[in-house]
Length: 251
Image (cartoon, rainbow, N blue to C red):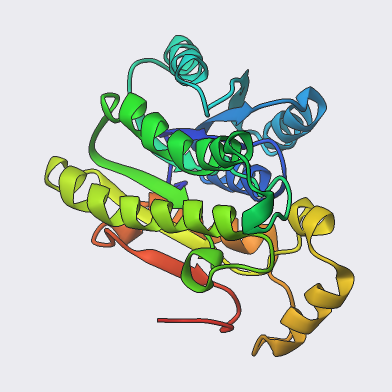
């Protein structure tokens, strides 16, 4: 018996990298998955095809979850496809966009980074909570950067993820009495397009060599942890921000 059989999951930013791996992993355990994406139709379709190839069921929904209009569209399409109840929400949408110092910030950049990373987490959770009942689970994707401030030029990104970390703790208290668990996963250096775009090979090699396991993590390893948190096996785990960084940093 698959551990998430009969469940419905929504994954924001689910079309590529960690989001894709999470979408596929949830589907492998039997969940019907709503794969949200912003721009890349081809990436979303590749994720959908990968899910269908393993016998899973999913839909793709284009929506900008940094806007209330986009969130409403995502909710409406989810209800249309799978009914008015979901069991798993993964707030994965996020981005660094550029490395900028304090003097390089402007309001537009601030609103972009905070909107995609934190505003989306807050208002997607608000929108979908009404569809979630006892035994449901929200999993937010934070970052090791929330702990250590991140690398150079990532102050807004790390701050937005710090907000996600604190929001996770607050929501675990608010929603826990309703039987909805809220946790976050905090990846360290994971081999994804994120780091291909924004981290030099020199820095990646240095960080990997400083990690006790002497390597980068893989998106599938993050996805396995998210899937575990969504199952009944994690039924007493609530309010945690769980590190997954090969031992580079820990509580």
